[in-house]
Amino acid sequence: MKEKIHHGRNVKRFREMMGIKQEVLAFELGEDWSQKKISLLEQKEEIEEELLRQVAEILKVPVEAIKNFNEEKAVNIISNSFTSHDNATGLIYNHNPTFNPIDKLIESLEENKRLYERLLESEREKVEIMKKMLEK
Image (cartoon, rainbow, N blue to C red; front, side, top):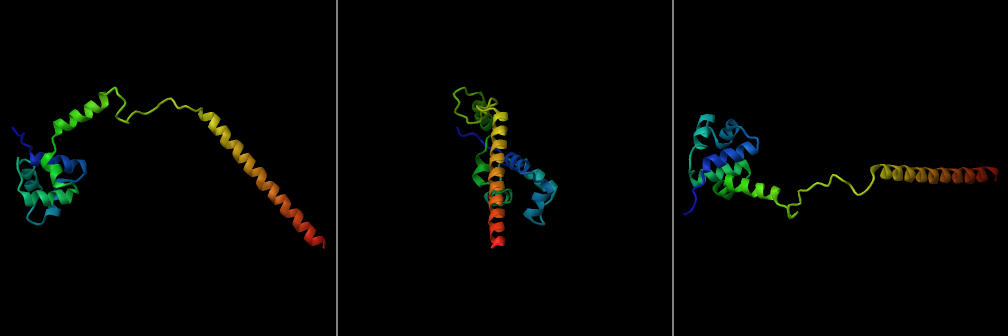
C-alpha cells in the first residue's frame, strides 16, 4: 500500500527551509491569497496539481519534491549517514592535520624573505645600470 504524503505539510517544510513567510507566499500567489489562506493550504493533505505547481515555482523546488518528500525517511537517511562506520559519508572532518601549521608559517616567511632578497638584488642592478648610463 502506497503511503500518503501530506502535501500541505511539505509546502510548509519547504517554505520554512527557504525562509519564506506565509504572507510572502500569499503575496506571490496573488491578491486572492492571504496568510490565513496559506495556513489552511498547509493543513491540506492533498493540493490540486496547478496550485501545487505554482507554489513549487515560488519556492523554487520541483513539484515532485513536495509530492514525494517524506520527513521520516529523510531523517532515517540522515541518521544512517551519520552513524555509518564505513567512512562512505564524506562528512568526516580531520581534526589532526598531517602538517605542522607553524612549519607552514615558517616556510611562508622564508619564501617571502627570498622574494624580498631577489627584488632588492634587482633594484641594485638597476641602480648600477643607471650609474653607468650617467657616467657616459
